[in-house]
Amino acid sequence: MRIGFDVSQVVYGTGVSDYTIELVSAMRITDPTNKLVLFGSTLRRTKDMRKLFPEVKSYRFPPTFLHLLWNVLHVGNIENFIGQVDVFHSSDWTQPPASCPKVTTVHDLSPMLMPDEMAGSSFRNISSVHRLRLNWVAKECQKIICVSDSTAKDFQKIFHVEDSKVEIIPEAMPTRFVITPTRDEINSLKKEFDLDDYLVAIGTIQPRKNISRLVKTFLKYQKTLHLPSKLVVIGGQGWGLSDIPIDPRIIFTGYVSDQKLAGLLKGSEAFVFPSLYEGFGLPVLIAFYHQIPVITSNTSSLPEVAGRAAILVDPKSEISIAEGIVDALKNRRRLVAEGTKQLSKFSWDSTARKTLSLYSQIC
Image (tube, helix red, strand yellow):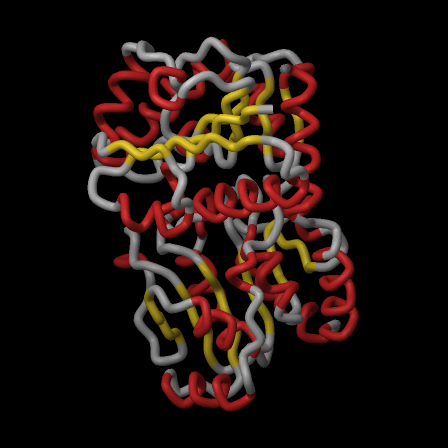
């Protein structure tokens, strides 16, 4: 098969970037008889894209131009840019018309499910872009990959597509997080951030990630429930920081390197991920890899990803989160063992094989 694939998103360092890099790389290994024809568009980061995929057919279009061309006007077949292909796998930002069968992956429906999360115009624009794109996806794609059963159900509820169009193909942990920090590296990080025993949370500060409630929960119950002495929050400031109390027991690291993230996770007592909504929940798998107990939400896709390997809590209840942390600390050995088993259920080889099989069904 000649497989067209939009890799424009690989330059952004997001979960969708990881998915694209890992899936394309795994498909090449799984079945090298296929020809992958890569399309990429970035206004300023062509060099970064070519470092990852030297053979990419790259263009310097602003994202707003392709949004107008493909999501709004919906003109300009993808074959005009990459030549004839048997199937085209589109990105999470634009949906071009094509003469060949099309596939897309739906990662996250938060712009549709939580449109009031942020009042700023930029968020409303993101929500509008995704709705326009997904309307074309629902109408024109022969197959729609959803990364979890939860995401599939949400997609079908919003866009009313038939069951036969939707396939659930989970992703896996990005290989860039396969890092083994040394004891010296962990101790150095503890010294840098003035840590002894601590919990870790990961997420940009925004309402959906529920960091504000987690911080308030920790400060309320840290002494009475004998929780670890500090909570380390890894991620960007985003919005909603003003709702979070300032306290020396709360450490905000901002963005850190993958190496530092691995070290902070490995040295922690537990990982807390009380997100209100996730399309998949990759941080849970990363925590499993680093063999620390996990506390996460009983909502959206997170129970699917966590299985029996995490303590599931009500993310809107402070006492549920606090008691979940206590439970995880008491059951560390069991949760770590279960986490290793659960992690083994997700692999990029499996994702690639199922995706290639899907292409074959519609070509």
